[in-house]
Each structure stands twice: as structure tokens, then as C-alpha cells.
Image 1 (cartoon, rainbow, N blue to C red):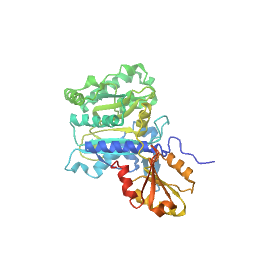
Image 2: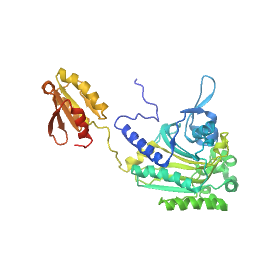
Image 3: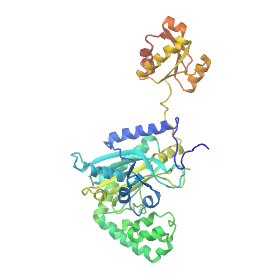
Image 4: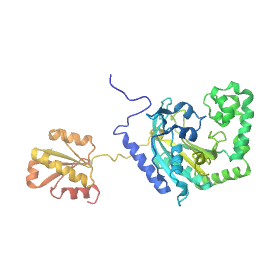
Length: 426
């Protein structure tokens, strides 16, 4: 029996991988404009990092991590998300001492979670994320949201909804936490085991529960917005005013939460409103965290970031019917006839490629008609036809596959002349 790919993973084949490459280039260029620098961290880390950085009470840590022991008996985990690794690197390399503050970073890499595979959701997936460390200022919150929205906008997505909430500062969070405990405690036995465990540890996580989301107490749970102190209200209103100034539409959603203790102030999600996208509409999630760096052993450092799955982004693009320019087509396909022409084609092909031209030739010793068909299948814009007679006369015939016209050109000058044609200089 042939070995098959593990469940929840995928092969990204030629013809599909070009979408990924295009997205990566767009994202890289936007990050350059916003002055975010790329960071690359290990695919596996010490398990303790994610227990601290993601949280013991989260489904990710409790149910979804790929954890194993290495030969030295150390517990290691394939990274399920990127923020914890970025925070660890920030502390380990003392980036808080960099003269240029805040530190603005982005990553794009493989993540791993053991969860039920479905459309746009895999056990091995690619996550893009951005983090800003070292600044607590409403304008940077707005900038981070603008960065995420600009990526989606530039890729062509139109059916988007930004929802935003405030989790308040520590004082506001404590007041809200106490209110949630009082609200749920009398009937907590009606909730799932996970929620019962979360009541005292982290009651905010109860609001994220998928099993009990239709329970009547969920609808009447106290809103964090009711417990914001004046400083938190002022911060949130300033973030919203910046989004308005940047012409980024938003909806305030008091039920949007981030369950970890060190999350505070701004929390947001970007969703797809496209018809037929499915029940899970969230494309991107993010928020402010002001205790994570301290949790990693670093100094008190505010932070804010977001992350999204490239797979879900591609699914949203497909639902909206957005296609990409195919830049993988062949500029020039060499058709060679006869042994001498075949040998010459090997050198000519390399010369074209070194000149920056996408070029290909026949490798199967096919007849001229079959070579022309092969050239057509590659989407070649031009075909250069070379036979023994052409070599003797030091010429080559260039055929335009769109118009069908054919031109005889000097073989000695062909590479330089074709480069002018391909770049539109002629």
C-alpha cells in the first residue's frame, strides 16, 4: 500500500504554489513599507514556552499541541503559534535594548495544532503574524490593525468586517473577572468540564467556549465595557478615533475577548462576510498584551500583534473569485531540429536564463509539431526555432505565439535582441 500524506496536512503543488509565492511577496512588500522586520524562530521550542506564552487553560495547550520528548528527555513542542516564540527571542537577544524602539517584527512560518481538519484549517498550517514590542500608544494599535487590513485590501478582498473591543487595563480586568465569577458560579454545574475548571482560573475563557455558547447565561454575562475605568475608556476611544481617521470601518463587539491574563486594552478580529465562506468566518485575530515579556523573564514591555492563517486567506480569495497574475509562464521556448541544433540549444538556453529570461526547451527528442504543442502547454509567449540550416546561416526564427507571426533574427545577437523584445524595448 502506498504511503499517503498525514491527515490535516497538504501538498502544495506547482500551479497552486504560485498563489502562495504571490501572497508572500505582497505581504513582504507591505511590511517593508510599514517598517516591520522579519524574524525566523525554530519550528520546535521547549514545551514550557507555550505553557507560559499561550496559557495552561487554553485548548491549544490542553488539547492541540504536538509534544514529544527528545533523546535527552527534554519536553519539546512543535510551535502552535508564533507570538510566544517572538517574545522568547525578544528577551533572549535583549532586543529591548535596541536603540530603535519600538521593535516591529513579522513572521511567516509553519505551525502545528492537533484539531479537526476542515476547509481552510489544517493540522500543519502557515501563519503570518506581526508584533510590536515596546510601545503602549493608541496610534500603534491603529497601525497594527491598518497593517492587517492593508494586506487583505491589496490582495483584493472586499467582503471584510473588523470587530474590535477593549479588555481594559489590569484594574478593569480584575473588576470584570470578579463579575464573571459571580455571574457563572451559581449555575457552573450546567457547563462543560472545561468551563468549570476555568471559573476560578480564568473565567474570561468561558465566553470563548464552543460547547456552551448557546447557554442563556452567555447572553447575559457582564460586558467588559461596563467595567472599564476612565483611563481604559479614554485609550479605547482614542484607538477608535484613529481608525476613523484612517477610514477603516469597524464594529465594537463587547463579546470579543482574549482569554489570557496578560491581554489588555485592544482586541480585534477581521472576518469574511463573503457568501458561502462557511460558519467560521474569522480570518485574523489580534490584541494588546502587556505582561508577556515579563512572563518570559524580560523587563516590563508592552506589546500588540495579530496573526492569520495563509490557508484561510487563500480560501477567502477563492470565495471572492480573486485570481493572481501567472508570472511562471515561459518567455521563450526553444524548438531544436537535428543533433547540432540540439547541442546548440543547450548553450542558448543557459544564455537566455542568465540574461534574466524564463526559457525552456524540449528534452524528449520530439518532432517539431510535438515540440510546438509542448511550448503551447507551457504558455510560452515566443518560440525560437533552430535547425541545422539556421545554424549554418547564423540565424534563428522567432515565432510570436499570440499573433502567429515569424521573424528571422541573427543567432549571434539573439539573446540581447530577445531581451529587448521581452521587456518591451522594441
